[in-house]
Image (cartoon, rainbow, N blue to C red; front, side, top):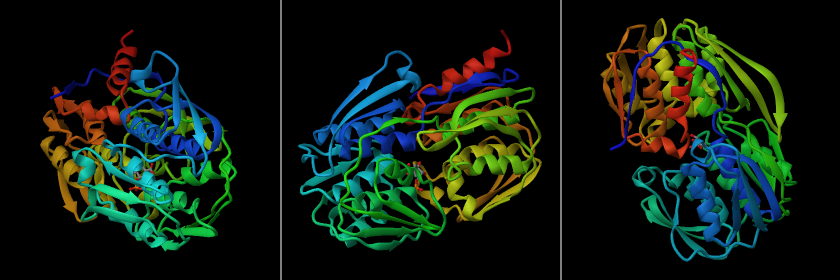
Length: 439
Ligand code: S3P
């Protein structure tokens, strides 16, 4: 089993470029495949999850070229050319579409497949097979798609067909549910609408708009007008806030650190962690704010500072959803308790992130109380080095590696192959920051 060993070697100093955004990489492949003609996607995340999306569209007859050399294992500077087939140009896959570890691939694909005049089977790895699919099957069935599954779990078969628009009130704030319905809405006559309890990430809406689709947002409701052609595009993907998050927290926690994280996507539907860390007392400043391909981008200047615990809940939760594992590490090092509520969705991520983080932090001697929808973390004690299992969850592996920087001795993270789903260059980048202050 793959593993990494981490110990505190002093301040982290230097400038880093985190990998491209995973959510936007998926969407760029999906929308360009459905566009009519050639699209260019710059700064694509060459990592396992988005490669699952590429693989699925290739299996449905879309020609997708990968350009760019070197640095592939760091997930950077890759240009993708997609020869889009139009909304009705996909062909039936001969074999099951393998979505690997990727919830975004499978749930967004369900939306696209709902509108196809063929059947397709979807499968994934052990973690994806444990994740709920009814959340997209139910609304897409209401629109007219037919699903066969193992009681709402993989493998599942989607038979698409003529769809009718719906007005769906989602019980959870989820960009995957919202996007699946909006993508199916492209195949409907009329207007399909999704209302969420709180706002989730809006990359699908932004990209559809840029591709010429009629999409409107009214508070928590997004509506799309179907049957319009998607314009091919030339799109540059910003770097991933969720990957930058590990270095934001590391820079704040490790004494003497000073890091500049370049070209990070700061879409407000993603930056809950930045607001929370700042409220806890972190010294993180967005600089050089600008827009790239319709998405806000900034460089993040991070400097070591003390943190105080706080209460976290409400509509900031979906805007922080993938950052809770690393936020738990920050909370463990903060002065006083941090209480997280309203985050039940963490139980159905790549692992049950409430249980896996509580367990991992306890191994390092942190006092943690698990709640049904969150946890209470007593911060401020010195962490003890330990051997921690990732449970095959990339964000647990990387978060606990950062925790290892704060421990007395050598921490081992077990089962680290999963890091390649989103951040293949993570260990290299961390080692470089550790060395920079020595050179
Ligand atoms: C994602 C949405 C979120 C997030 C996931 C990526 C997306 O999932 O946790 O990592 O790209 O749409 P949910 O929609 O289940 O909240």
